Image (cartoon, rainbow, N blue to C red; front, side):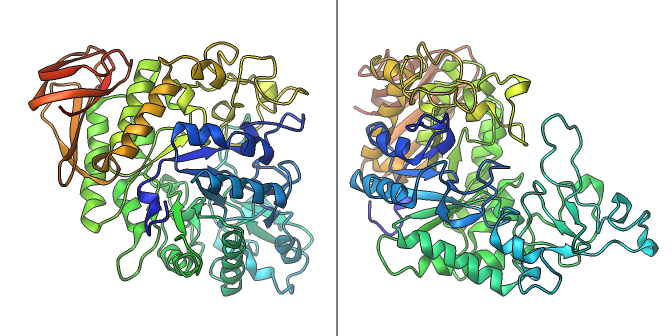
Length: 536
């Protein structure tokens, strides 16, 4: 996969390092654990891995509070361990994407330590510092009191046990000003209006590209730009429109695109953005234009929040066709990730999780598979005393079980940092499912193999089929003669579905029972079942 746009052809596999595999017995996954299981990713058929943060960090937000953008936290290993992961991934024809967190750093980062040391420090303007709101503007109370906040912006996290979002400002008594943090107080926002910040952060991209990284997942990209006036916003607009989807952000992304596209060594590098906005129309703008390109790929999250309902999913797909196809933008598809409940938990059954896998891997665009999704994992049940995440996302981050032993393939030692997901000692581990040809793991592997072998599924056209209520169907086609028909039952009832003219081989079926059979005229779908068909 060395083509100019390799990211259009691959299936990307997201690894949350803390939860993938522990090899040193501390209960936290590490880079060596990733290296040891690259064969699993290659066997599955993915073409890229995305590593969530592994940088030096105090772990207030479990790595998304970066204290050094150019080093590995000792919790995960060393920079040499990272280099081995890249080298061995490339040997398996796997591209490597790393998380890059540009909106904010850790408050332990040397930049912020310098910035808060004095109002006169050269890095003071690398972050957003503001004085008390004057009494004449409506503030009340002594300096640094809640009544004197610079504006009414709120942070994104409520925190464990809290019901309301705290202010997005924290008072620094030593320098006598407030600093902005759209997430935790330990995550001060960088000031991307400052050219020195842009240059320094661009250098961090170059650092990782020089180590062989093929691309970047850009965290909370829509929040980089800020309203320079820091004006109050209506409460209904929380989280603040002053930090979401600002025009200043697009200027920054265009500059970053030049840095990535300008890297001289092949293959081409890429950026996929976490554009956390509610509509596909908004997401589409982050691709830029031919004259001013921005992101190569952009996460489109409405399907992640869609219920298991044919109408809801048709609307999501139609929105992609309507907003991305006309501008030549390549879509992404995702069912689960480290920030949201796993889709097996959301949909309520394995049959629906299997059918969703067919949807994910047959639509036009780049699919992202979250580690454990291929096992049909559910969220862990995390008791209150073990909840640690400020955003309430512990359940979906449960450790990945590799086998049915007591340690589930992790190094023996203390309990992992989070509880195991349900049935880790039974059917929900890699070893058990590798041994079971009827498992959801083997379904994912078959789907990825079929996708890789079919130009229609990797890059072909998309067209809806007429189907009964509660069923969605589409045709993927690529010249000269590659076609696939996909049918998915969302109704839970199953039943007969008419087919396009001709005879069709059942290439993939969610339970596996019908694979290899031939259908003509009509096919019987299982309840919450799905099929992929090819011409006989």
